[in-house]
Length: 197
Image (cartoon, rainbow, N blue to C red; front, side):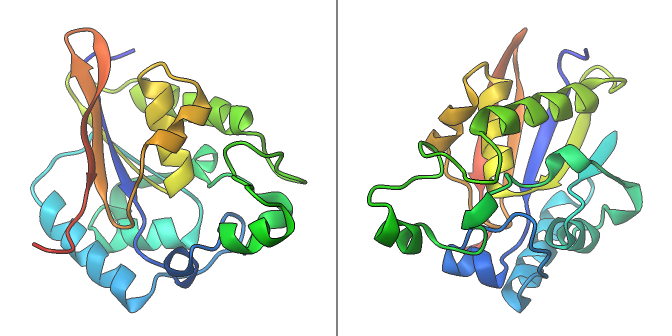
C-alpha cells in the first residue's frame, strides 16, 4: 500500500436520469449537453495535473466524462466502479418508489433483485486496493464513476461502514480528493463543483 497516494474521485457529468433523480445503474445512457459542458470544465480544472493511474467505470456516462476531461487515453476500465445495482428500482425516482413504499430509501431498504450496500462497500474496498497497488508514494489516481459508488468508496476510505456514504452528497461533474493526514486516511476536498466559476 502506498501511504500518501491520493484518490481523485470524479463523478460523471449530468444525464437525463441524474437530472430527474432516477436511479441509474445498468442502464447505459449518455451525457446531456450540459453534462458534456461540465466535463469540459473538468478538463480545464484537471489540465496539468499528473495522474499515475486512471480507473473508469465501464458505463458510457463515466467513460465519456473521462474522455472529454482529457484522460481517456490513460484510462483503464474497472468493473468494480460500476454503480450500485438498484434491481427493480432501476429507472425510478425515490419519490416514485415512496408512493408504493412510504419512507423508502436506497440506504435503508432491501434492494429487490439488486445489491446490498455492504456488497457495494466490498467492491469499493477492492477499487481502493487496486488504486493503491503499485501507485508511487505521494502519487495520484483518478477514479471516474457514479454518485453512490463514490460516496460509499469515500466512507470506506476513512473506515466508516458503507451505509455512511449516505452522509456525503455528490454533484454531477464534481471532483473530490481522498488523502492523508500523516498515516490517517482523510477526506481532503469534497464535492468541488464548477457551476458558478
